[in-house]
Amino acid sequence: MEDELKKSLEFNDSLQDKGAERKRLVQNILIVIALAAFYVGMTVFAEVMHPVAFLIFYFVLLGLIVWALLHYQNKVRTSYRQDPYTQPKADKKYFAGMAVILIPMFITNMLREHTWALVIFMVLWVAAMVWVLQSRALDLAARQGEGRSAQ
Image 1 (tube, rainbow, N blue to C red):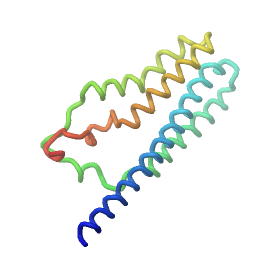
Image 2: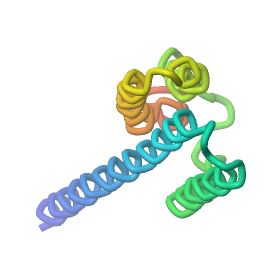
Image 3: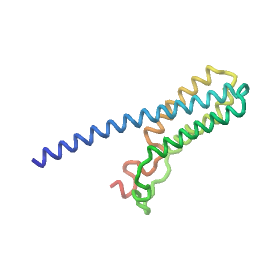
Image 4: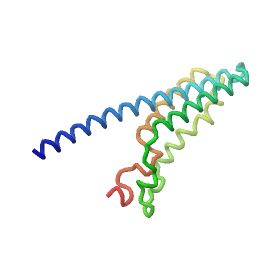
């Protein structure tokens, strides 16, 4: 009887995990597409856009990102889940994720005159950002196999 109950609970957990992962993937894709549209819009239409419209667009996008972060954040404080004596260190995956996040600041201005090249770059950047968000490259505490708490 206990084996059947254990198997059914494991099956239920596996179904919930798949649904949560799919929801997280869709949310990450939508956020990254909105951010890429912001970069392309600000690069291509910077000279014709009124400064007030730019500020409104910027604060609406910033507000949506803050709302999404506050709405979907975990309810358990990070300090409760970490072992303070064995903190994971930044590695190549972390630095690659940071590079992917920061690269549009440098590339988009160089591609201002070449709209198609900018769009192609942004499509590649969106794919890289989805990898960063899905692989949790910037979340050192969530890495498997690091620190005493993962053992």
